[in-house]
Length: 120
Image 1 (cartoon, one colour):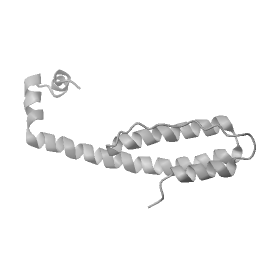
Image 2 (cartoon, helix red, strand yellow; image 1 turned 30 degrees about the vertical axis):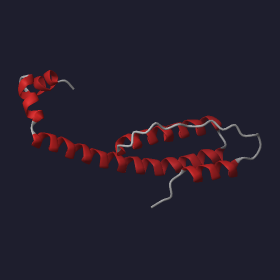
Image 3 (cartoon, rainbow, N blue to C red; image 1 turned 30 degrees about the horizontal axis):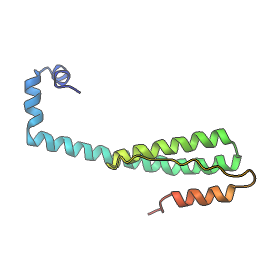
Image 4 (cartoon, rainbow, N blue to C red; image 1 turned 90 degrees about the vertical axis):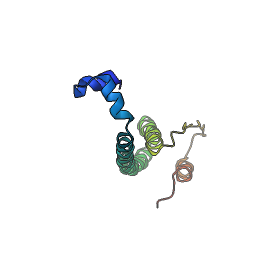
């Protein structure tokens, strides 16, 4: 958000906003607030991730490809959010794996276990 927009919101001119934002105590307050939000985001993401993996298992049991694809895409997006909130902000790459037709439930389960971090 620009200084002028902030100034209009708090009814001050942009120079005053720049001065306030330049103060060490303001910078510390902003950093503390970001850390607080980061903790909240990571906590929420962990809860959602736990439910998401349950949902992945359910869709695997149903053997519905479209639902499985949607759920795993959502989990991938959640990982991006999680990485961003934790400060890692690493690019997440997903490899496409072509598997032969037939019963691959065990192979998929092994793959998911390998990709999931162990519970703490």
